[in-house]
Amino acid sequence: PAWTLALDWRGKDGFNAATERAFIAHDPLLSDKGGDIDAGVVRSFDNFAFMRVYDAGHMVPMNQPAVSLDLINRFLANESF
Image 1 (cartoon, rainbow, N blue to C red):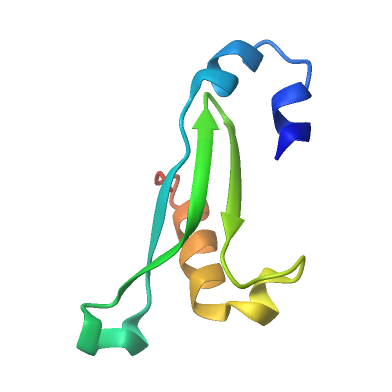
Image 2: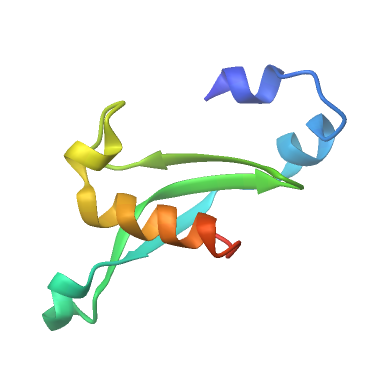
């Protein structure tokens, strides 16, 4: 969203120049589809990331529990989104 592009911080130019890319989440319950789903989009630069999760409101864990679990697991393991 526009508000993330307007934030004043040392990485503003890099974040604004970064492109949004697909966030592919792994859902083991979808093994018939390989377990991977197109779950949203993410833009990141340095240590700042903004993710939009499809079909979720502000309560992502309630709306998209498997996607949320994958997101938290990656965050805790310091893996990229």
